[in-house]
Length: 65
Image (cartoon, rainbow, N blue to C red; front, top):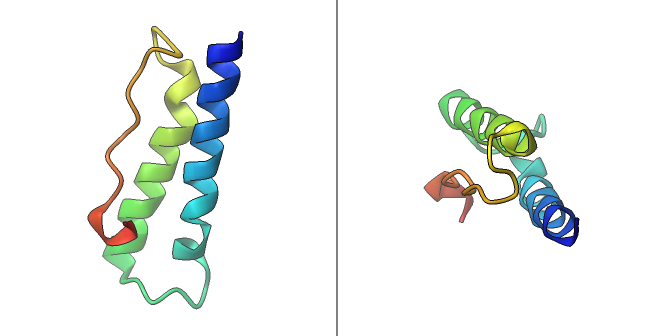
């Protein structure tokens, strides 16, 4: 139970850290915003994956680093 809680906490931080990328005044291109949207969906889908919480986080787009 703790592993799932810790995993979700880390995932939520990753989601929060890229909220700015989808704001209406974000400097990103539409292509980059699409990439961020995909990344965020992959993060949200992690708990549904087989083996959760022993799954890997998706690769963060390089422009978010």
